[in-house]
Length: 561
Image (cartoon, rainbow, N blue to C red; front, side):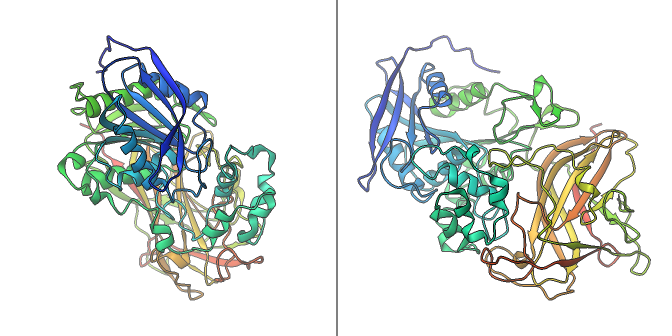
């Protein structure tokens, strides 16, 4: 239960405080302090989005009046800070330097926590890996993952250019002034930045590094949890377009952290939220109800009160996992993630060879497929000049949501497999995996998989999705092209969900070879990524016989009792 705080403080604000880095660069900080003669613990937030926003001021005052020193810093090269902004590259050492500077301030008791969302979350991990002694706890909200975890294509996603454009100067650039749909259609990918009117060298640098090499590993953190021993509160939403990292980070820290303090003190909170989480009960056409919003500041305060102040407020004894289960639209506490007792249940693809579009004969069931010769494979043509749309706004603010894909499923280059209406509700909570047996006429191509809930009205709600680029089927460290016609089993990570399919609803799986502009279009040539202007049509075949049983593996949660 939340602790009632009897004392609050007036807030003293110091703007534009210089924070020295070891290389001589000065970063600019706004420092919010409680009016007290006592030393206090500190909270650090570093941001590329401007420290003088209304949101930053509200956060600073909220925690300062409750007895914390709050330091908001413009990251290197952004806002009022000196230096050159190069995403992530300097953030580890800069973060550690900032933490050390804060701990040495006369108002600080030497105890520091970090918090923040998105970019501000990922850079906490990079700073923590520098092992600053004063850092005692973190709150990581909607963090991006390591290179290629979210976009396993070898090149940046088209909408990543929107983010690079937005942060390409010292102040925020107005992304609404750009025709992003036109920009994303540009080929080759390497020179797409020219279409924005700005030269963005970072975009081209990223395109030049299609494999997970040393250039990328310098900003990676998810292979290094064994170096950390920190309590971390992990927060994200099922429709966060960077959702996959939060459960991965929870698992990584609770199983691989260096010490018991880290392994036993991870907490995961997942709501029905997009990247801008906990702001509205509505997302797209769905309303998840007033219970979907939580007292996020209060939760973060309790976390820091326990780990930075040592207060016995009960948060350490609560269940480590708190999930919002969609469909039922209810919060639930669990003992771990993935949930203990999960039944990994395959739902197999079936058809008579005509699963093209939702008007085809594709079926999805737990019945294993028939022997080869008793079932027909499904075929479709993928033309990179006419990619399957991914429903999204064109900017990078939020990529996709619980959108209705019924209209997209009219296309013949989308294979659609659907169960019969469910006779009883079915809960699917956890990581979703597709095992797809497929071949292509191309040397390289993509396969996309989407999991949907089809309502009795026909509304086809996207739940989660994933993809594979064939040349990276063995991992992002090397490229191996296909032999045309070669049948390959692809294990496709479709991220995570927590959803109850209600009685009368149907489970659906889509298979396609594009999801544009969430991912760039594979040109099917097998040529160098990001450098070609023309593609070729690929003839795709999906198999679902006894020897090649394509199936989506769903984390089914048995009814309690």
